[in-house]
Image 1 (cartoon, one colour):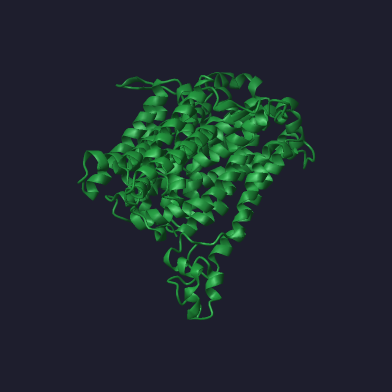
Image 2 (image 1 turned 30 degrees about the horizontal axis):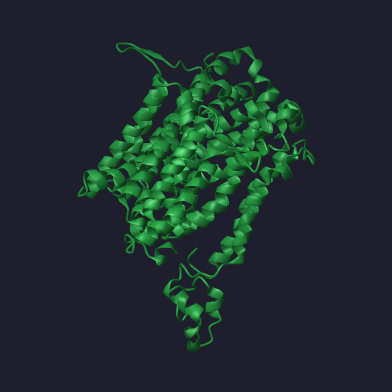
Length: 106
Length: 519
């Protein structure tokens, strides 16, 4: 039953799509809109809020503009920002897998 | 400076090796190199790993690796803004650029201006995006040569050679390097820098790893290195009542640079050459490895301070010629054995050739697609189109070479600083255009013009010495990267005028793209 109405293996709103019980749901307004313009009518996904974290972390300069705590003699200002290079990349990993699960598209 | 035969030998051997690779690259993943998407985008066939090397070599240029530690060496903490800059690039790349890839793939677009042409149906707006891209990139290519120049000088290779029969030739080594670069770019297209990038990156990572382990050990540890930095420049001065000061300059430089970086033509070329949109998303996750290397390289500036290279007599002539850009080469010469100096300097010089090649290809793509084919010869055949691109890539590189040899380096630096302010003005057309068609092309044009004007004016207030301009918001002085404040003006004008123009114009220009093309 699932994915019956979608061209793709899973469409943008895969969760909702998989939950479709029968053809009656095709009348569901939201779902119908999604059928016509899958790229535009994607529901907002809260997982994307994670992408804001690096912006907050990197742009809130007064927070990290300090020497203490040091690690191995490296002031906080420096190791904090180096650490966020790694964290910024790590944050993208769950989003990547969330987007691509069960699908051949990213 | 004294000649260093071992270092020069290793350096030249590596240089010859990548030259052979560059010419051999034409056979790699063989395609018809008489077609622009084959020559100028590598046939859109690069997977995740090759794209990683290509973009890594492309975005983290030799000039970056020289200039960022030079800035740390000179002004301290402020130079570290390159780190928040590279932190912010990747969420943007992850979210926005797969959309550009998809629509470019669906419609056969080679440049960002191609997309703007299709999306907004305005060849004028596309021309403006293309010209902005070319003008912003030219000084960037010229600056890559500074990286090569510095290491050649540091190796002790004389900058002017006396060739029997030809007489005295100034800047001969630079000339040779660029002729070689131009030749293999011409014959192999984007495949050449992609292949060379692999070697360059291997050398780069080895150099960085050695530098951050060996040098601190010799200098007595990181604590000693940071202790040698003037406490006044170790951190940014905190905000004062009525003046936020350098902290806001730091944050806006990071954000503005991150927004501008991916709009550069060489970034777009690198991104569009990948074989699928997933490769771009994966690269947003793995490219920060280069950011980490860059962060460590930035700290080399502090190591150069701790090593006291500036006062050593053997480096006096280098600092006199290149200023603080000589800090890292001097540090390597002091701390590394001669053979490893050869490896490290080769990493920098080859690291200049990769982005220079990609930038010239990107400019050539823009000229061919959005100027030549649009205005000069609309009926040009596919082969003709590609031929023009190859020739333009040569012209662009010769222009950069002329620039650096004939004019003071300071001009290239100032123009590159302005380039960031200019290229960001294409953000509404390119990035916002990926999400909405409601912006009117006429409004985008006027917004672009206002952004360019305002940004250039702000930079002119400091006689083009700095790209930050102090805004006065509610009685508080807020130093802000001119690219960011002028972008706000640009977007505000484009949005307001779009409302007006759309209300006046009942039938908008056709949009060649469909919603499905972006997914």
